[in-house]
Image 1 (cartoon, rainbow, N blue to C red):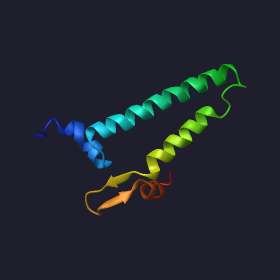
Image 2 (image 1 turned 90 degrees about the vertical axis):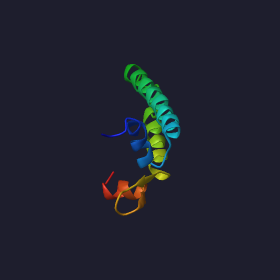
Image 3 (image 1 turned 90 degrees about the horizontal axis):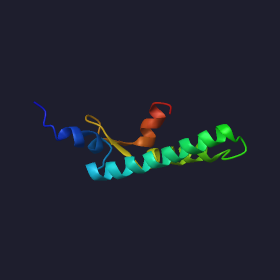
Length: 90
C-alpha cells in the first residue's frame, strides 16, 4: 500500500520542489490567474480597459513555469522544462 504522505510529495518532487515550495509557487500562480481572470471579465464589459493585461500575465506565468523548472524523469535523468516543452511542442 502506498504511503498517504506520498500524495503530497510525489508531484512536487517531480518538479524539483518541496511540498512548501510547491505550495508557494502554485498559490502565487493561482493569485495571478485570478487577477488575470478579473481583468479579462472587466475587459469583456469595457473593451477599452485591460486590453493586454490578462495576456501579459499569462505570458509571464508561462515563462516562469517553463524557463527555470527541472522535471525529474525516472530513466533518463533530469531534463529542463523548456526541453520538455519543445519536445511536446508547447
